[in-house]
Image (tube, rainbow, N blue to C red; front, side):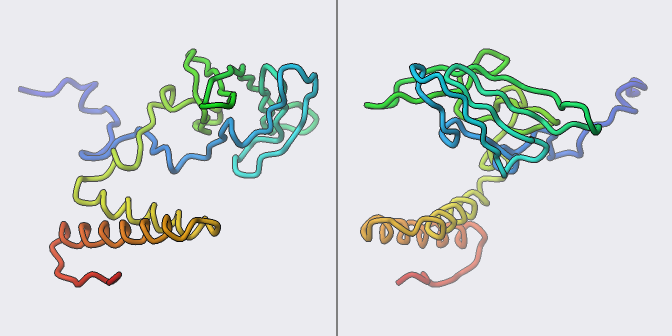
Length: 186
């Protein structure tokens, strides 16, 4: 049976690949990174995030956050994207979260297609969902190694436990790849 012409000329990703973005590769802003003042203080602080491209500044208020994008032309203000804030309970403290345009309460916004969206709006997937089962221990070992390198103030027992887990993940990754290697951590 012949394929319809609109399906034959459709631009689809190659087999085994997806157009859905991987969330760990997208620039992101977290509600925890922004200094959000209390509702009872009537202050608006302006800070400039360095991680996200095309954002000129951020206005953080007690009830909303305004993201100012860079303008495309001189003398013209760029677009502004506003997200409302919602209080959520996190243990004994109160934490703020963004309310996305889709209505979901989320802690992280991702920069995708020149706007800030939540993980559900951009239909993003995690790196562990994008790779095969045999490659997941390598990803986990990389994450543990990066965590150990980035954190200098960790308790000694915690550091040793993570090093042991890192060695176990490396051994699991080597066994899944079919190599025979001795444990390098003992």
